[in-house]
Image (cartoon, rainbow, N blue to C red; front, side):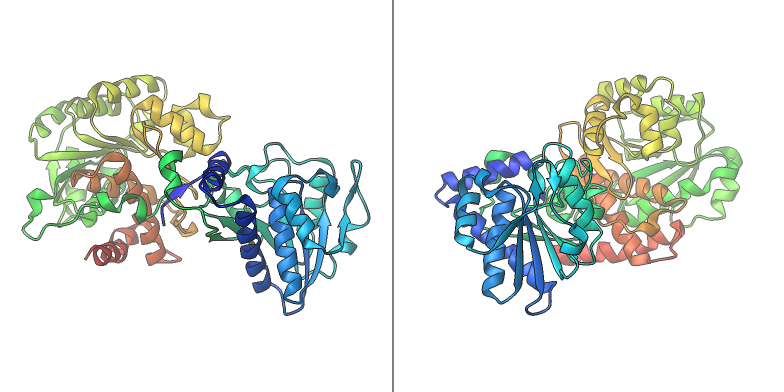
Length: 503
């Protein structure tokens, strides 16, 4: 199945194209409601009590179908409408008419009727079919009160499409939101399923296929994706049987001074483990001994300062560069970055290399744009806001996209829901990173993985996506208690998995 994610607007277009293609909307609703009923039944005992909360739109229509099917299977179904059924239209009205079950209207004017805590006291499952992904304004009044009552219940909560109150395009909470134990969505996930806090509030997500064909994506042209191998496997650097180390690229990682060498060594080991044929650590003279005492397969080259970079990179075989981890902040770093960019190498800029342009980030962006070589920026939130303070009020996906457009680089905006964005508007959201990756040096390993992939000729956006996914998988393989030193070796497991899948 495709890695594409659909915004609520794009999902509406997929529905329309499918209906125009000959599948009635009521059939789509019937299939969606059947999927909801199947998941709800898994969370309730045989004959258990299931409350289905139905809103005024098609999300409510899915709930009516689920209510009918669950009642036919012998469950004690309680149907609650947020507002009068007289306002229902189209397929939702037809689904309501076909339900023929007793129901209660929970509101009168702008007030909830009755005590919701008492109402939900015996529920085994509450199905949230109130609003789903189509909500376009913050919840307030009785709808918000109802959400809080549901969240305060002891029932298992199943959300239809998305927890009501979560923005399907951004994952943001709109006023208040359902805290679901599970979510069932249709055709494809939405960005709000992967972006926090929506990801946290959706629980386990099931994607149900309801008859929409993937061919509609040719018309829709989605630009947002879940970061998984389906997205980038075609660009994965497959080792050739007759290949050799010189055909797999040569990455250069710049080391900081003697007391700050560890970050660059982590990066260099990660670049080598990821498949770069050769990796050289460019070391200041005072750090040569400490670096030499820790390195074996990674080569070491003395580089006295920014003025020595042009000579180092005069060798065209050195085709990818990483600078930033532990390198130091200041004018010397800016000069070093300018010298590297001028040589036209594929480049990863991380940590100190980003912060050094705090006072004039546009200068960095102009360098990247004028040069035209592949560049990946890997900021965490703090570094990002130093470079792009004017984007503070935008959601994470929009921030990353706009930053990539402005900078001319692929941007990896790190976090539990890392977003990778390309200057052409493509973006991917990552969701495989375990929480124990939040440890010192982890980001240095990520930057090194990206440099190793660039060295092998992977395009910048695909290299960044691959790097972030591998980083997450290495974290899962290393497990709880990992430290950054564990990650390069832990890359072997996901790399073996990719090799096997391509065999």
